[in-house]
Image (tube, rainbow, N blue to C red; front, side, top):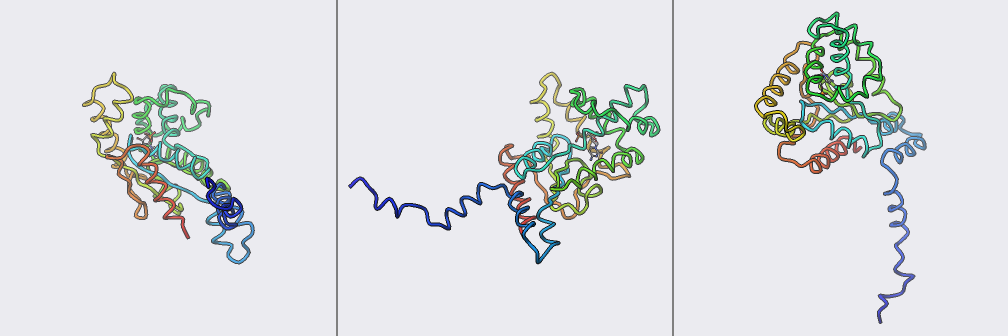
Length: 253
Ligand code: DC
């Protein structure tokens, strides 16, 4: 009487077995398989097999965390393009140049890649230098190819920055513009470093926003076809879930 029916009948039906098998296969590897076997519609098969996600937004909006999580979720490589500008800013200063002088910053664009791994790039000072060198059109042009090459990786990629959806990959499959109120962003920065006082952090964030969105070349702005994701009232987990849902809605055939 303890047995709930015939054990043989309790086996999942064949269809369920098949679908639970598919569930365990990552979305991208499954579409790659689909692309390989699809002979009747090559453009569509190509498109789903190679997915580029553009994530833009201001400092401390959560775009970096979201971009990394999307990359892990979809099994794609990720490029934090802000790091390139930070490297140029720090290299300019180390060479004794002036970040506000285009020629000085341009020379620093040939920085040694080992610099990208240095913790110094994560500092607020490096962020300020990055914002200053990034206004120069020749610096932006010098970093363009590296970003486009990354986006052109065979399976696709996730890139985050300020101008990914507008300039670097305007034809990305999914674009997010991640934002949050300046007050919330300043508070997040303070949680990371309590040695800094809130008004100074807020002032830094506001001046960086102004410089990044006010520059003439590739200013930070939301692309017309980008989904807006305001993370002001969201936990990291909720923001990531929302980002995944927005991307999936864009790539669903
Ligand atoms: O994302 P981040 O905070 O690391 O960026 C640092 C600065 O680099 C940012 O204030 C402006 C500049 N930047 C840019 O101009 N374009 C990008 N795609 C990424 C960063």
